[in-house]
Amino acid sequence: MIVKQDQLNARLDDLSKTMEVFAPVRERGRVYFRTVRSSGEIAWDYGVSVNSIKECFLPPRQVFLRYTSGGFETVPVANGRPRLVFLARPCDARGVTIMDKVFLGDRPDETYAALRERTTIVGLACDRPDEHCFCTSVGGSPAGTEGMDAALIPMGDGSYDLKVLSDKGRAVFPDAPADDGAIPEEFVRKAEAAVRRTVTIPETLRDSFGSDYWREVSQSCLKCGACAHLCPTCHCFDIVEEGDCRVRCWDYCQSDTFTKAAAGHDHRGAKFSRCRQRVYHKFDYYPENFGIVACVGCGRCARHCPVNSGISDLINGLNER
Amino acid sequence: MLDELKQQVRELFAGDVGLVIAYGRSRDERTVPVFARKPADADALVWNDRCYYNLTRYLTDRDVMGDGEGKIGIVVKGCDLKTLNVLLAEKQVTRENLAVVALRCKGMKDADGKLLAKCETCTVADPDPALCDCVIGPVPQREPREDDFADVDAIEAMPPAERLAHWSREFERCLRCDACRNICPLCYCRECLASQHDPRWIPASGSATGNRLFHLVRAFHMAGRCTNCGECERVCPVGIPLSTLMRKGARIVRESFGVEPGAAPDQRSPLASFAPNDPDPEEVAIK
Image (cartoon, rainbow over all chains, first blue to last red; front, top):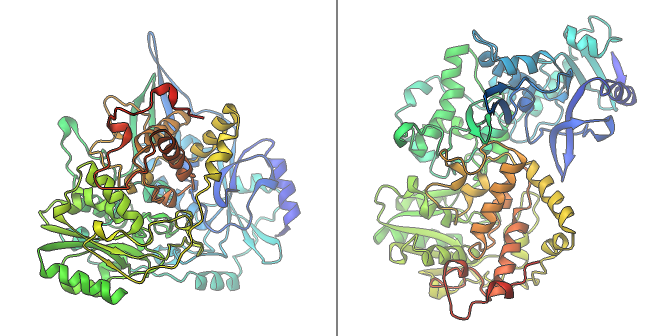
């Protein structure tokens, strides 16, 4: 069903009365996913946002319990309103399905499951990949709909082709027809051709564990968390005591304290081993555990790496050896 | 100029240098820090307007320096030399262990091709040969504009509540990814206060209190030491104007003690040393 921009605006303004809406917003020239109150705040023309939508499901900081004089009380997932993630790019929506493998598996994570349950994801097919994007190399597509409850395909004239993909999507767009057919082949072809970077995961990745390559390529790494914090699938967390609270917060595997154990031992102390860990977790351990690569090719790690590295280059370099 | 640089680096290996930290190119054609370990590695070096990295950062990186490399060669710009001076003054590196190859610089550009702010006001484009083993390149014809500290003034002009609101808004975006800290050549503490688990001085999670505390602590640790290389602001994924914060500290120190950090290799930080003519606290007017 073709919808016009003003129809979408009106629908969103209506939805924001009952739902908490996360959408791309331009702040100081960069685009972030933020809570919005009206359609006027939304940056419809964005490419890839700085942050990913993972923080809607795995918040950077989440209070689990508060200590009281008599013991403690647990803190329920705050704010029970239904939520809408609006205009998620296909890479980001797919990232959520990858995190689901961990958080909704045999022992579902209560908080994640609750946030996931009451959130609807409306995606936006991608017509503006940049030089760091490589979704098509890792099983994704700029026209992919994995993880979406509804999808909008930009028609290039300010209107969108709306596809409803689930019951949740139907609840958001009740007027859309039931089966609206596939995404136009022409759009898919053009969008996929626009993704210029290719990344080839070597079949022999596992054999490279002991390679000198990791020492060589990790030298410039700052051991910061820019890549992991922006990554739509990196989900490692720490549980810390902060004042009177027990808090779950993001952690990152390059950090000096990530593998620090009791008595100060660090079994992954060297920089190269941390760099290698990040690659292996995504491209070896995850496929082994869940049958899927834990990378969606959004390119954020390369785009924002302080020293212009990135997982795409790390993987491709391995092929050249 | 590049050929001369490559030749110079090759010659370093002929001497007792085992590692040269320089600029090179990644597979995807971006300018990156590289670590040359043999004469042939010099062939791949680059020099262009994206060599914004302050490579002195790696001189205290134990993962890079750990293996008894022998003497270290390092490629620097005039601005990086200031940082090297601070590292020397703070005894983090030994001059005798270094071979300093300085490049005369026309200024570095950001992703949009715009000259970096620090380059517009640069007065050290032609590095002092007394501090280097060699200086390469033609003397740049540049007329730097005077640093007017307009960004700092704009914030000082705000009433305190507004100022707090301004910085709270900026820090709200902070992911606590540590990129600013980890790229900083002068944030070399082996154990950062912000990373300590027990006690947890600064909340680990991204929160208003934790973020503000983190940046405040960094600003205090940097005042009188930061040479305004601007790398913290360049690498911040969420664009926090960290240089403004650093320059605020720099201006207070300059006005109070008349000191420009990194001016000489034996110049100690005024906040880490005592001089009989230091102003009394009440004489230091901080806006």
